[in-house]
Image (spheres, rainbow, N blue to C red):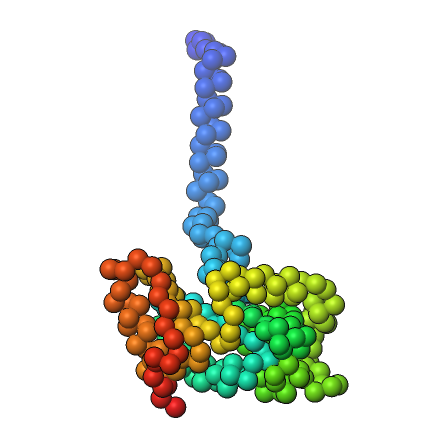
Length: 248
């Protein structure tokens, strides 16, 4: 007796092939090693935030940038009183971190042209080297100048004057700045050096102090400025002779 044979339909063959392909793929995937977990990308150098820094340049500052009080000194680099006061005020600022020091050029006519020549030098050294270089240059000028408009000894040059500083000296950039600061002082009626303007950054109040204001007197002026900040709107002037002496 012959047993009848049944030919599979075309649809059944296609389904069988798809199932076989799926089983083969699953078996292949089961043999592969697991992929390692993706590691988080490390931030690039460009993405790392950097703290903002104040650009170096005038007005030149000494001391803490966040100090509440600022002593703005109007000074002449040929002025003998300014020269004697420079180291004293620097030591005092070092001992009082809540007060910073800001420089303002005021070359006096009786000390020209040496006073402006000194100012040009320290400005260009500062432009090339930054805040610390400016204050170092100012100290060097006061140490070496003959004072009273006589200027630096003939032939004496600032040590290690950089090409950038020399390029500045060969330009008129420092002249424009010095003239602008001198004009600003004249508009405020400031004609002698040293003159100090004490500023309270918190209240915006100021006190104008004449002469080499020292020690306890400067602290008293700060106390007065802070105490009057909430009550008195304008600025005051205090003569140097009404102020005491700074502890040495």
